[in-house]
Amino acid sequence: MNRLSLAPPLALSLVAAAATAAHAQAVPPPPPPPSGDPVLSSSGYPLALVDRPLVLPSGMLEVDGHFWIPTNDGIDLFDVVTMTLAGRYSTGTVEPFAGLELLLIQPDGGGGETLWRMFAGARAPVGPGAARATVSRFSPTEGYSTLTFDGRFEYKQKLGANLAVVAEGGAFLSLLSLDFGGMTDSGNAFGLVGRGTGQVQVAPTAAIQGGLELQIPISSSDNVTTDTVTVLVGEGLYALDKLDIFARLEISIAGDSDTTAFLVGVLARPL
Image (cartoon, rainbow, N blue to C red; front, side, top):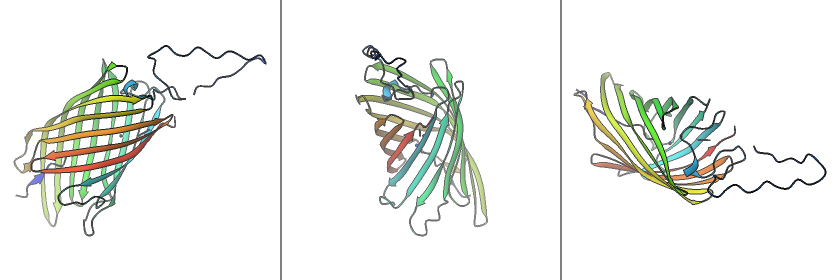
């Protein structure tokens, strides 16, 4: 029996005030905001990462566009490059999101599919945090695919003027299938996932964050080989009113293998 390997989706997820004078006589400017109030963009969204909520304000759209550039023992830097395009929109009560990942560069004869990954889901405020459900399809090569259902609860707490923490936990179910060269096979895996991240605001519009994510398999079919996946993340973000620029480093460790990936991209909020 051909053995299938669980390939967890890895991610990244992108995205007016006016002053008027009513008379010829100059109107004095408003007093400055009290100390500690968040600095807002022209759309009213906080520029500081530590002040941002998990769910966007009602009516806001955020678009994510970034490149993923991995390297490991078998892949040199820029041998593989993917591009992710995603968006999320808040209605106030629910925040649907969707996106796709395209394989732009691969080694000669790599045989990878152009459309690597598709995903969609929704996030909604629940109590002090937010619930998120995602379904994704990962198909790195023709004839092999993983369909994953992921549910999580997210919570964010601001600990100080320039410090916040984000925690999330949940579970996933992956359905794997193989249809290649006349061979067909299928399998499944179920596991738990948890993530913790610290955010530090180093300037009014610049922040860094870092954290750890664990994907822990609980059960799987006999023909599926699974490993605990550990992902270490570090990121820097710079805010420009309705546009963020970010760079991220991800180190993924699964069994005896590890992959280091660099991500660069933007988050735009046109609405």
